[in-house]
Image: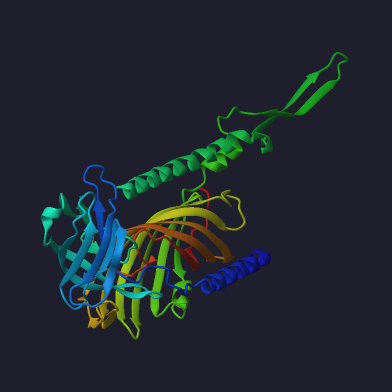
Length: 161
Length: 278
């Protein structure tokens, strides 16, 4: 009886120490929330690469993308405003190589989210509305997911070409 | 929907285990008749003369009355279904408060011993959390209830010396939690923004499943100590929401699809019910 009791106590103490020692200290989650826009082929519904994409936030002097070929872009939204505008320059969309310029306006709200003790807080956004200045360039646009959270390469707006 | 399917499967499994445990008692009785001793129920002395005229006395004729149940069957059928009520207190969670950032939690539970095989149980606990950081303040409190059962693999015989237990079990858990996130400092390098914002107090209802291995050792008469190793999984908010509580009472750190491991060090008291047979 005493042996069983001793074994039990030792096991419990060891498990306690092990569980305390295994406390996590590093953050393994994304610490940013980015608006994801994906370009899709309207026929095949597969990612569609557009050439020479340059994206800049309206009001910022920094470029987010500079003449790159992409099928998706990930953009940061304002924290202090509920509207964020982006200016796009595209050198070619498929066979149309004349070069295009348009803006995207996103209306959203911002809420902080406590993600974990290791990662701290991250801003979450809810998209209320979006609007392209030249919708005739696209076959269709769709709000796929209105919740912008700290998920890597999450898609929120789908643009069919 | 898949969670509901899991719950249904587990309930079904529990019913099967319960039925099997009762049937197992009978089947053991049938398979072990050679260990039994038949006691003489009646004896008569017989005297008669043999061919030489001497009197022969036979004094040990045993008359056995046919009986449909053996002695062992009688014992197993006489095992009481209800064998006690346990009151359990987890002492690990309050101690862990010192290591987990000011999250105080306690759990009390009660389980019922049926055949010393099946232990239906309910748990109740509360959590109080106040995490003040340089970049945020998170305050949360709430309660949880859990219900489920455990199946014990050892010491099922009525003539056992100790009531030790080793088994596996499951719980379905529900928690109601209030949480407030305030004075959050957020920064955006691209837009060159710094902001301090707060959320209003929010409430969430959360459910999840637990599977566990349990040990319980009888240390002195009605006093027991034990340990539970738990896997907590399939967390689901009852109402879909973009934001969520970071800590769920009884579950721990929450995120979509999270699985947590838990440890409980339990002190138990069994309310006295000494008789194990009818």
